[in-house]
Length: 573
Ligand SMILES: [Zn+2]
Ligand SMILES: [Zn+2]
Ligand SMILES: [Zn+2]
Ligand SMILES: [Zn+2]
Image (cartoon, helix red, strand yellow):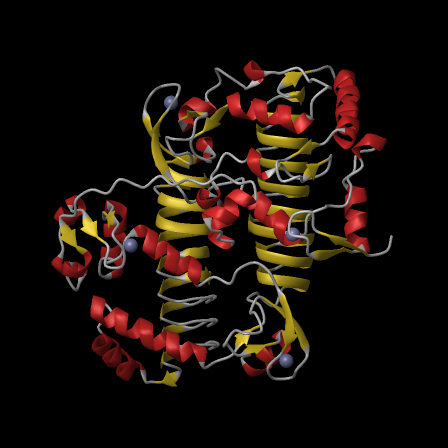
């Protein structure tokens, strides 16, 4: 097969399908002629956006369970007219989704019928692996964890408050992309760290403040690109005694001390080179951003322990092999294509929210622990189902072949004229989330007009705001001056109009770390963290030291000094 240039059906930009891509489509094709996976008609970025618009980790609302009536935290706002069950009701054994079975009607496009089914089945309020959780009622996209509040897109966590994209975080709050670390606060991209505050992209560090890209450091403040250092402030060496004296003067337990240092550090960091992409030395033949311990994996974004993958994102649970266009999360996922929020499953295509040992699923949406299902929604522990209706193995094979043939001849066509023959992810209108509530909006923000034009829904509902009892700017300078009565206060954000409260888990963590209370609301804090992340998508440019070509997430117009991995390692080894 030779490389082929195509024009994206969605954005009309050209994109290239490489010979290795064709090999992958061949590899994941069914043995029967009907199941041959065609090359995609949307470009990689449009495909990623389309997938991410069908899931929602971060926009949470309260609504009542449609089964038991209890108030529950939910991914769906009350205005979303679908059936939503609280987690215990959804996971209960008294229903499995076969109740909604539909017969296939060959005279109508299959995806239209699938959408009908999707509008009448029961959805879980939250995406949680309930049997693996303890005391984590207010979390989403979570598994194997205990005592967490607002831990989102996380596994193996304990005592975590308001943090996301995590694996193995403990006693951590207000952080993003934390792996195997403990006692982190307001930090991003920490791996194997202990007591790291207001820092970014540090590995194997402890007692580190306002530092970025440090490795194996201890007791450092405001440092950048250091290896195995101790007692440094803004990269200047101090004796232990002088360091401790200086540390006291910096008043890191006060709001004013922290705000001053935060500003100084960010200016200082800018003067030093950035690695063309953040990752470790265990990568082999990879391109992407935030890639660790991976092999033969291209155009990746936030991924570790992957092999033979391309265009994958949010791989936070190892390992993952042989996947393409796959957006999370891993845990032994294999041969996954054009799918999102799939874990511990294999041979999954054009699907979302399928996990816990799902095998051979196509067009599945919320298919849990099932084998050989095609076009099913909110179905648990079932096999050989089409539109949630169970068939004998042979019947299933014949009908599936027929549907694939029908999809090619009579594809679903949306109001914008875009066609969905067999072999692509669901149409935007299939998503049960408004674009601005979906994960896509976090990484590829759109205006309401743009979203609607793209076929997505929009949610204009305003959150109800309680009256504030105290202003964020009147919070005490140190945590020592606050007692538990603060948990009752409704605080107004110093940046926007939203109100927020301090959770008891948050208060305990801040006391343990001797850090002041946050003066901004949850939304503002979260936004600041996501704004600091490099976005998916890579650019071709030159290393600013040796001029070798690099593939990097830093756009050419960015002001940072960007080095190729080799130059960066030579200078900061
Ligand atoms: Zn496109
Ligand atoms: Zn319920
Ligand atoms: Zn705010
Ligand atoms: Zn270079």
